[in-house]
Length: 83
Image (cartoon, rainbow, N blue to C red; front, side, top):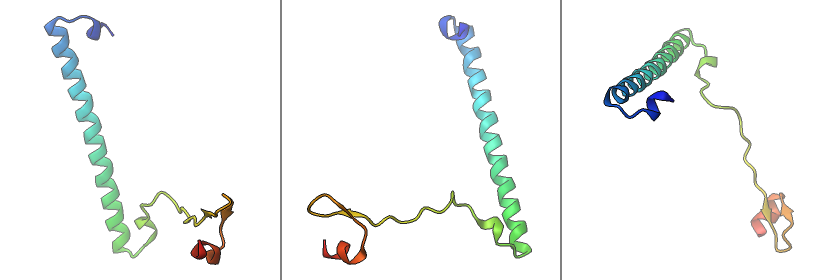
């Protein structure tokens, strides 16, 4: 907070350098994580393991529900087609 409140050029430069260093650190950590994931996927591919290829966030079922003229919810496929 002292860096933000004090507007001297030296303090501003110091704050900017700390921000750059933090951004660089997290960018490198993200690249490292992606590299590790790629290596793991290639290893699983070579030994023919499919479990490592799951990159999804889970299964989300498709919801087919509409409202009819009376604002009631209809889930029957024939009623939906009729609507």
